[in-house]
Length: 225
Image (cartoon, rainbow, N blue to C red; front, side):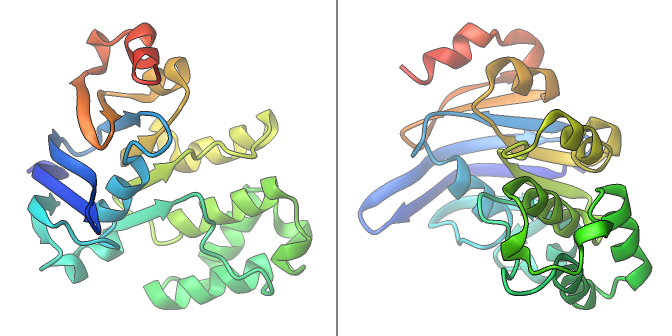
């Protein structure tokens, strides 16, 4: 059974079509990387797959369950890392993770283990608003993987991370983690290196959908022109 099946997906904001005619299939354990300029529909696609937005037309299935009708049965298997960290700035990193742990019935030991592995233990009891952007991003990574999701939806996951931080997060959200992933990226070379399948969006519509081995960085750059 594929992890994702999308057929004729359309999503509108008022009269504006944000996504149209999106069809794809992604096998479990594979990585789809989505490229396209700002406003192309990348974030909207992630939010539909996360069951945060309803499709207006078409069919979306995650692990065989149709969205939004059966979204309750797959939300616990999906982790979302978006542009916004989805964390409370007045709470500490540890308090934020403990809050999400309760939602997913995750033990406190998992929280402490993630804080340690992401080098956040030393400042995990400070309000998030006092931490650097890179530390907040690491805390957001911890939140996204806290419940050990089978599917990761990652929107520019390396934002604000320096090389040392990238080494810390890679075991959790990189290919070695063994999860099915959908990654939105603006980095042709780096994104291709992560991808099994490439989707290129322009104006909310698919301009490129192919096995990553058959895609060149130049083709991806053409999406931005």
